[in-house]
Length: 341
Image (cartoon, rainbow, N blue to C red; front, top):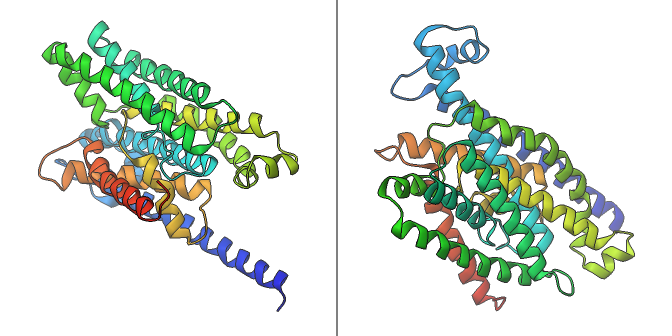
């Protein structure tokens, strides 16, 4: 077997494993999704779920499933897919495992805008979501412009993003110190990342955004391999480096913005989804689809644990933060030992 055949065989094995992992993730999502609809203070038999979900049931069970649990679970899946895809785009584009929207300041921008809307204007509901969306997009643009000089190396954008995020976190802390207790409590719940009380009005915007942004991410994602080889090599391959990078960053920021607007800054989902998917696939990198599905599974599992396994109903961000923070510390320690930081 010559070298070409060896490479082709390795690619086939990688493709088969990637498809197997994708299928396994889909099945796991369906299983956790079904359990999240069935389990609660009012249990529903799993066998009754298909009829209830498709509008063939009546009474209390139908109301609990279709009006309370189903929109919450759907919102969780949409938010997880958006965060997972956004994190994978950031990390692969910038070639830095720290480059995720909740580390480089994008979600902090959404948080600051949402807290301003809540504390200063007493806003709620759709207004807070719209403010978070605008804040994330504005912060993403600011970080890009500040890091743009001479290109956008991954380390520079991460450092600029961390700095901007620190400033915005200080703004949030300042507003929380003198806010009315009721408004501060409302802001704190939003800042944690929460799926409690999510209805169909929360699921609509991220669903509409994913219809546009997910195909755009998959289409633009084809250029990631070339960009990871370096700007000069990518330009030699015929890529418009700056335009492609800006488009990818815009899609990644928009995905994180819509997810944050729907459920708040659910901590570390974007950060861990791509590394977990990469380990599952077993190659040098995972595709965007496994990362997106991993994000959805992490959110569903985190929300189920927060609601049913910890003795008290907690926001999903508490669980994902508890899982993601140790991973961040481990990553920083590993990079430091390797001399990369």
